[in-house]
Length: 413
Image (cartoon, rainbow, N blue to C red):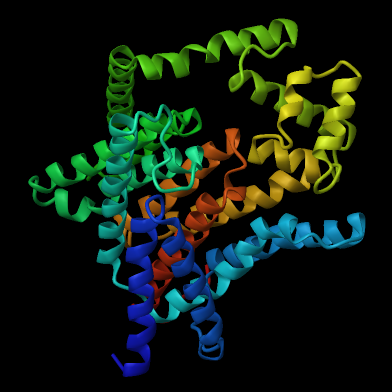
């Protein structure tokens, strides 16, 4: 490998190791590595012009990463008539993702460092959680994410699951690797459970279903068996943990109370239901273009004053859901923009299953997990979670494209 090519390869490999390892343990370092990687990719832009011809999945990926920030940009300048950086920060990450993707696509990276970075991140997350929960007596832990409880819980869970996925080439040939990956999974799950972030837990049945793709012959029976085992595990955890019982026991009464009376029963599920209801009412009145960025809370207060939404919903200034945020802010265009990104990355990873099963399934799992997380959180708007998604997508998808291109000139399909 020429010296000039070695430098980007080393930088990308270092970022692929450090980003997952520091994601929920050392946020300051995590952000510095992400910023340094983006700046490095912009610095090498002239060299990135000479790329092999793009596949159709790559064209879609780039278009989707431009569509969402473009929608936000147009809303600010055309409808709002003013620029607010805070409103553009979330979507701007997808513009910054593109040169990182092209950098990884051209120069590649060491795939092995990704799995070790993920495993270290999972173990460190579980260790943080144990220390805060049992040594400091913190009820809902947040690890090293500066009190971002939901980001910690969601990413901790994801790191544990990804440890199993990325080490598949190892444990499929040597069962001794199972001890390592199960340990990492246990640490990641413990971090998630100790955080009490229920939003991440809803993704587990879906992730368990997809994990079967790692087996030699995925079948429907295997998927049912794995999901059933997960259900038994969840029941055992609920039975032995009063903390989990407390977090879960409020959900059904909150849903029943809200649907029967429209009143908020608790400060978690009930509040979310009222905010989603308000978002839906705003969308029904503004189905095509929504009410625009930053206008949800004003409309929410109007619904509260009209007696259509419980007054307790007024304590939150956003819909508490990526999906409903899109609906209320942009109408039908909102979910279309967000899910075009998820769909593009999903398709890109799925098209590489035959080439690299472990890395492709890992990418699919991140997409599916974030869709689930986004149902109950403004997941991309949480800095830690948003940067994790964009950087991991850029590195992993770029790595797969690089490896495919090494096999010869791609055919458009």
